[in-house]
Length: 251
Image 1 (cartoon, rainbow, N blue to C red):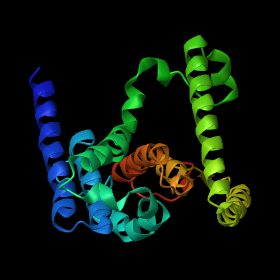
Image 2: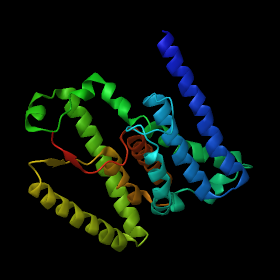
Image 3: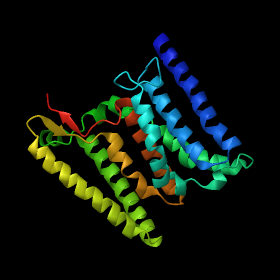
Image 4: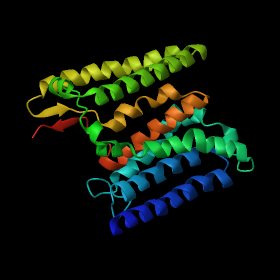
C-alpha cells in the first residue's frame, strides 16, 4: 500500500512539473519551438523518474546523461518533421481558453498517453501476443481481436493520411523520403545477413513509431492526436532504453 501511495505521489509530482515546463514557454514566449522542446524534455524526465524509477531523472538506462542530450539534439529535426505544421499558432495563445483546451485535448493528452506505452506489457492478455509462427498458433480469440482492431484502426488512419498527402500535394516528397528509408532498410537487412553470427537486427519501438511521425505533419485534429501519441511513445522508448543501435549483439 505504501509503495502504491509513493508511486502515485511521484507521478503527481512530475505531472505538475510537466505542466509547468510546457505551460511556461506557452505563456511567456507564445512560440512553438520552445514549447515543443520543453514537451520532449519533460516527457523524458517523467518517464525516467516515474516509470523507470530513477533517482536522477536525467539518467538513461546506462546510468549516464547522454540520451537526454541526444534527444534535445534531434529535437529541431523532430519539430520540423511534425509539430511545426501540426501544432497551430493559435493553440499557444494563453488568453484564449478554447485554443488552450484544444491543445490539451488533441495533442498533450495523447502525448501523455503515449508516454505510458510500456505499461501495455503489464496487461496479461497482451503479453500473449507474439509475432512468431509458434506464438501465432497459440494466441486465443482475444489476442486476435486486439490485432484485428489495431490493424483496422491503423489501416483507416493510414488511408486518411495518404489522402492528406495527396490533397495537400506533398505525396511526392513522402515517396522520396520513405523511398530512401526503404533503401536504408534493405541495406540494413544485407548487413544483418553478413553479421548474423554475432549480431541481430532489432528496431526499437522509438524508431518504429518515430518514423511514422512525418506522416502526421498536417493541420488536422486527427493528425494532431496521432502525432501526440506517436511522439509520446517515441520519447518513452528513448527515455527507457535510449537511442540504441539497431544491431544488437546476439550473446
